[in-house]
Image 1 (tube, rainbow, N blue to C red):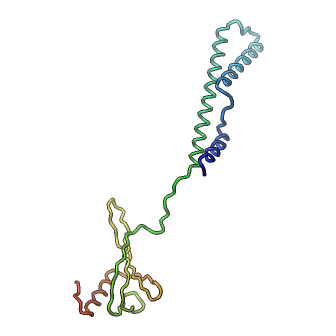
Image 2 (spheres, one colour):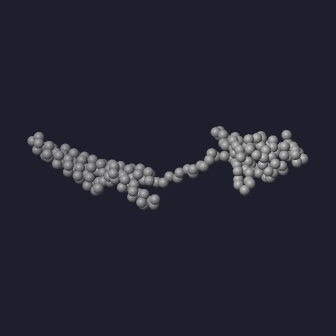
Image 3 (cartoon, rainbow, N blue to C red):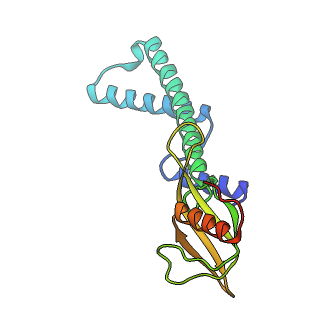
Length: 189
């Protein structure tokens, strides 16, 4: 939303509960003084007293009413400005955090080459020889330094389609050692 439109919408929304004062501070002061004088004359007429007998007190009350009108206008202006600021802040777009699709992991692909067909525990069929991508998923531990725990080992097979098979890391390592022993290579213990 463009800045000017956002400001205009905020001003309109703020008008609902903190209307912008119409007129100047002098106008508010004069209205306050006039209302006080009218109230004083009405009170004098009602109580049948002579209000003009003490003109200094009447002048002091009139000045006080004028100042009160000016202060009221300033307060209403500040209240309107605060309300506009609050409404503007509500309409300011906030960058939302990026949505994570999965738990943050430290996953680096590795490759394993089998020279002979192999079978892993938990898999339903023997797999042909070849090079396979192995993805070891590590999830962060809830500590103050970078520490991860291995959660899954996935063997990606590709016979026209890519299939991810969950295997145990020690079973996979044992199958690789058996494959090396069968092909005559050195076996790591």
